[in-house]
Image 1 (cartoon, rainbow, N blue to C red):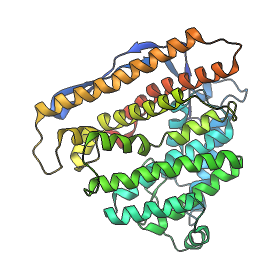
Image 2 (cartoon, helix red, strand yellow; image 1 turned 180 degrees about the vertical axis):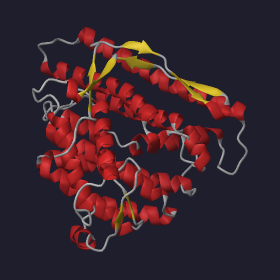
Image 3 (cartoon, rainbow, N blue to C red; image 1 turned 90 degrees about the horizontal axis):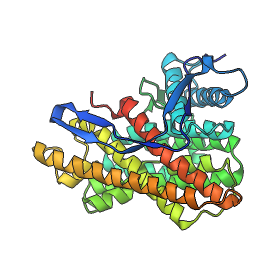
Image 4 (cartoon, rainbow, N blue to C red; image 1 turned 60 degrees about the horizontal axis):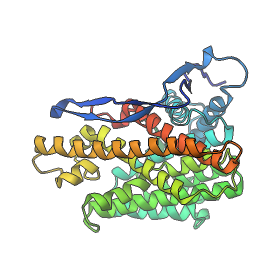
Length: 378
């Protein structure tokens, strides 16, 4: 029986958001990041204080499924290791925060698995040489496109898995085949819970994410222009949130054809989330010598060059303004849609739901980034 008392539910207390302007201090560099965000007055509700009416079932099932997935990747463990269990809890809590209105069991299970897999693959790729990482990514894409499945299944028995407290799926022997095996296992896990059409749509989104990672590797080794436009076109994919929205929207009408305007809004939310990651994780990236960060790229600096603090302040201010203008546009679009929508028109209601979900995500993703260990500089 899995202990679930540390899980948290989130609920919004405002249907229509106010404006919030939080400030993040970069202590080492004597500057601050000022963000503009929608404020829904989110409230954290411990599950033990919630009514016993099934309201937390989706979190419980997501936790159980995630522990099962992790154990399947580490067959030498006969029961959950405490660190494995803590990582599963962390992932479920992330999904609960990122999508507080999503309570569908299968969707939350697959969201949780994707959050862990994305973080783990990202960590593993960082430990590889660029060309090795690109090859590993190509194998991942082949797995998702149903190429070479037998090879990865056979390799599973030879892979060595070592877990450590990383808050993600785990750390394994860094090899191309091991990464592919892990993604194949994740894919099979999702196929158990999702209808075929939905799983295929999600896997297409995942392939797009990993293709973006391939291009990021090419950017780092100089095969692509080292400029902000090129980087942001990549970052909007590597952020990996498109699969989450595909899953979340499946709880509504799956045959709805979304307008191109709302596709553009999704791209804007991807950009907002990417900038949040890069700005909030800046101190850590500077310490590690990471080159794939919007701030570092816009400054034109590489890890071995002197960091000009005045330049840093100007660049972070510009990128915060770019983030905040996007949020302002999203808020205005939401207000315009709310005024013009007819509640009897189901298509308009669905599009309003999507925009509201995306706007809320810009807040919850910010809150996740500011609390997650992987983005902290210390």
